[in-house]
Image 1 (tube, rainbow, N blue to C red):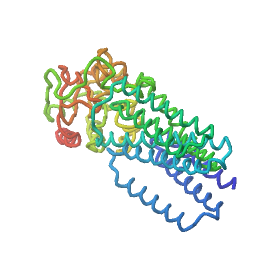
Image 2 (cartoon, one colour; image 1 turned 60 degrees about the horizontal axis):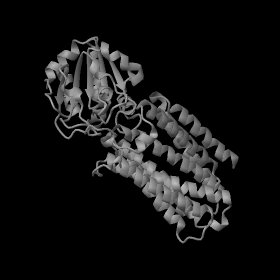
Image 3 (tube, helix red, strand yellow; image 1 turned 90 degrees about the horizontal axis):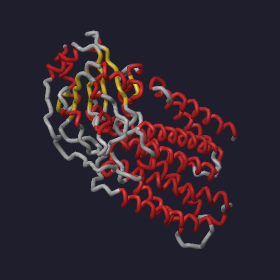
Image 4 (spheres, rainbow, N blue to C red; image 1 turned 135 degrees about the horizontal axis):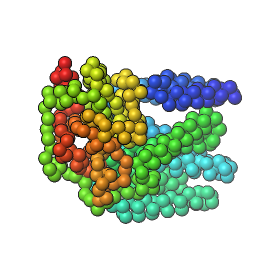
Length: 451
């Protein structure tokens, strides 16, 4: 029994270590997958009373759906897929806890406490991840709640949840108490995530990932499964560390992220269309000539790159410019895209060398020496108002110093603001030129012009 749990534990740890670099991340995922297979297989073998037919059928259905979804999902929809899978993990943990609480009187005091905590955390993770999916998929629209209303409703929901949990811990005979706890926790998850948008969303996804890991670990304690405890602890710890690092990188506390919405965080108002001032639109031929005769170019990838699936074109452009002795680096903001590491994965998929990718702190001082900053759909993380305008909803969030480059070229689908709904004054500055249209098409035309 100990060996069947020790082997997958080693696989999980080795896989997690290999996830630290894009070069080894693919094999790291295989290590983790093999660990999960060994863990599930060992658990089934150790419990001969489990109905084999039903177990194999459930595993086949789940594995088949996982493979089908993973193969069909587009890179632009990767954050949504992460949110869905995250929610499934939390929901599964909540259901196990709900079933255990149905036999509450046969549980010990410690097991009952663990089951209740698992039910709460799993339900919050499920509902929060579901809202994150709907928002990322752009299926959920509507007015944002003010900070006061959102904080009041969240506080009342938390008070209700704590009251119900207290009743459960005190073993009070309230009919359907576990169900009410689940409902209150689901409501709390919705209220925590529904006002969040813009650059804050990657932080919330990371936080929900950590909650799912904690719920899985707690479930492992509940059903005495060491593999689940180890796997959940790894996910919970890594998600917590990542959440803290991203919050620090954005100069925002987690409390501020959860209890305020970007559109309401200042006295300024978000953009709703064209910017004030005049945008200078350039031709692909002019931009191609500018890039060719530059010596130092910094590319800033954003969600526009993912939306158009233009990572291969970016690599081709880099190779064409290298033939003209042009140095190309990539500036990666901690929250660029819609999930942690989104841009790193995109560029690694196109086999762009990892040593060309630089985090914000490492490259921000180099923009002032760059001949060109080529921005591909990165709206919010390049907004200079975050540094200079106290009334801007983005004020205080560290951004890439794109505005310091000698020339700025922005590839953008249209004149509308980014995910946070905040206008970017960079686009109307005299040294900025715009290339409107799909990024994949624009990059293809730039490559042809260079050739």
